[in-house]
Amino acid sequence: MDKPLNRMLPDRCKMPYTLWRVLEQLGLPPAMVLRQARLPATLHLNPEAAVTTQQLFAIWRAVEELSGDPDIAIRILEKSDTAGHSPMFLAACYASDFRDGLHRILRFKRLTSAEQLQLVEKNGELSIFKEWPHAIAPEPLSLVELSFAFGVALGRRGTGQHITPVRIEFTHQGPHSAARQAFFDCPIRYGAPRDVIVFRSADLDRPFPGYNLEMLDILTPALNAALSDPLLRSSFSEQVKSVLKRKLPSGRTEAGDVAQCLGTSERTLQRRIAEEGASFRSLLMEARRELSRELLSNAATGIDEVACLLGYQNTSSFYRAFRDWEGMTPAQWLARNGTKSPALALN
Image (tube, rainbow, N blue to C red; front, side, top):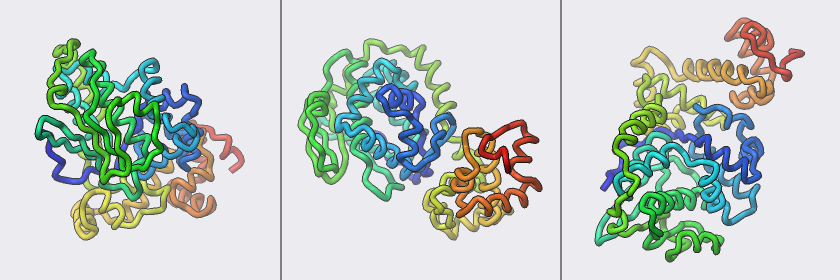
């Protein structure tokens, strides 16, 4: 049985590139989804981009709203079979059995998401519970359903058999879905205390005929390196700046908010920053300056959007701050760094 992590993971989640590609093929252009979620429309173009739990939920609510399809999660799974699954899913298909495959997926998810999954096995059943420590709103039904569906799909692909859960419980009230029922092929309860999927222990021990230890030895280290969060290996001040960059668009950049994301108290946060010779105010300024460079380097990002993403109430305030940082205007900085932006051409 996997044990829950002893500390809260940073509020940092990654959206797989393959998922953006699937949404595109389903008639949901990533830029449109991101606009609906009130996030930068070019976010999906950055493979290193990460979002907070709140932003991730906003993306999935946007998917639900724009599609208007109660079966959108099942559609995404079906399209993934042709558009391509994520590398971590494909790697898990080379596991020794269904149990091994699930554990590999869970280990990879810990590297890419603030989501915490807990496994409890007793009386011949394995229950997988979903928890989001940083969540301030319920997880969208489509996201819960998709994660459960991928788990079932892994079992079916790996074993070559029609694995079905014992039962599934959703905290959401619905809507009920014929496609959902047909896919999972098990009792589904709505309005439950928490989201959980339950498998038979006997099914988890079913071997994967495609087990390939040599392939796992090749894929696992590469995936670990690609998915590992550099935030966890950096200095505390760098961790604070990384959180600040994610929180700037929402305006929630108080020390207490950042401390919560890092699983510590505000007092401890201030002490650790001071021990590294910095201050919270200076790190906030550095985060804005570094993020401004990153955003301006993307020619598709307009000046108004940059100012907004940096937490400024108007463009003029951003211009004054940028001159203080760089000694020049954003347009001059772009010209010097070889980047042209139509939105800045006259500034």
